[in-house]
Image (cartoon, rainbow, N blue to C red; front, side, top):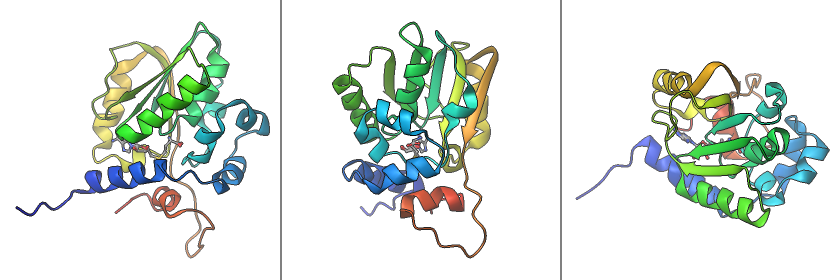
Length: 196
Ligand SMILES: C[S@@+](CC[C@H](N)C(=O)[O-])C[C@H]1O[C@@H](n2cnc3c(N)ncnc32)[C@H](O)[C@@H]1O
């Protein structure tokens, strides 16, 4: 029986493929989109090489020691690892991503780097595997534009946030019409706002 793949299945396969092809050029891109040298140096090198964001949401969030942070669509974990240094050993950072290969890679980096305050889970941002009112700060980097149901994703974010919690999102890149970027096609999905 023929099976036509839907968009979600296709992009999950594409992200699974990206995980197996770390790209050293993304180190330079990480600097360009707002990560500090100091941050890049302190986190697992591989996570920077598979970083696919379009900004630095951790820089926007001004995290404090002891906070519980959730990263929506955490990929290989770059923002989770940076946030983990900010919240310290009494805080916690949870990454949720729909692509199992991404989650496994992030877990591998966490184990190798002996991070004790991070956790990575397979899950959808439209149906978070997180309990109500348990999160101080949500971050997300180039993920929500992929969601087929953004309203539900935002409702889920609201459900898991504590009262007075905050959400800091980096998403679409403001690219002038006609400009061809010297970046990977997968990063361009976020520039275009779609991956179709
Ligand atoms: C452009 S990458 C960004 C990854 C990471 N935030 C970073 O900055 O490197 C998009 C990520 O979002 C994940 N993703 C896309 N749609 C998702 C959804 N509906 N729920 C959870 N994760 C999703 C993909 O698997 C992929 O890892």
